[in-house]
Length: 437
Image (cartoon, rainbow, N blue to C red; front, side):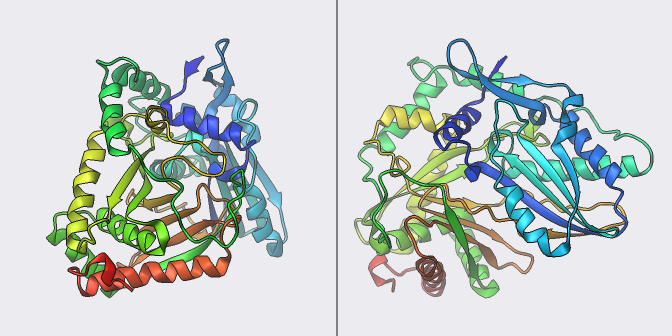
């Protein structure tokens, strides 16, 4: 039995709290047009699970009540791939059904693949992986390995890939050794916790946003999404502005989001949660697994700063957060010990996710592969802003919102407000917070 990484432990606890809800499923669906070799695809999916031990792992409690992992043999992955003949009209509903799957992590491997056969030359592949075994940066190695394995299988062979330098269990053990115990004053974990204790002391919560309904006593997991979009020209100006001021696009967007939240009623002291990749060693690049951690940006709007000043503040805080990124978020919460409530996430209720990791270009020999939207109807927090740049250079993404709190019309208006704030700063970055309409 192997101890979990800190990120996995948090996923395990959240999974237990939510009764196995699909909130932390990572899903993708692909329409495959052409002569699919379904036996080769099935074998290729199992090849990937054989290569990455994390996809052959079950979770349980040890004698001390601590969650740990147990590795299964490669032969135990057969039931993870299902092939079904389906009418084309049923595909959207079946995708929704697949992405809403509730994993039983103690008895079921944390991934599933459904191959929906609509006709001999039309299939839809639906992949669902629980966050305890994967993250956004895992998509690229997953797709690369699946392509390699499928190509080999269609040619009657097995994939001839370079062995992985480490497996996920090696990372989990290494992480505990390097960080040490947050309770040990001489440990790296303790030093990083102390930074966060000072940075986040006295954070007001929850963020005072206008809700369409009173916040329930216990946060639900139901959610929906509306699109976010900023045109190519405005995005180009914003990118130039970020470069001019020595910041990343992510920092600029977080600064603008802080202004939006403050103007919506969040006040002068705004916190935003943000995932950080956590792959601090090159050996982890090609590994599927949950490495992501959560950091918190605390933006001070009290002196009505100009956007350029706020951008400098956010840059400095983001760089400091990066230097203290290793300590798990749960340890930060425990150290700060904010007022706890089942009604909201501690320390922040809004997430900003800049999806800058490598976008997986998925190909299969002899097939036209097209991405199909697979949106789980869940929400991790009140609001999550997912953003990236598309092929044309425009900002594009989704605003995920908790349907217990917000109507769709409100979410759509907040998406439009987000765009307007960015357009105003692009037009005049010297504007102060009070100048923003």
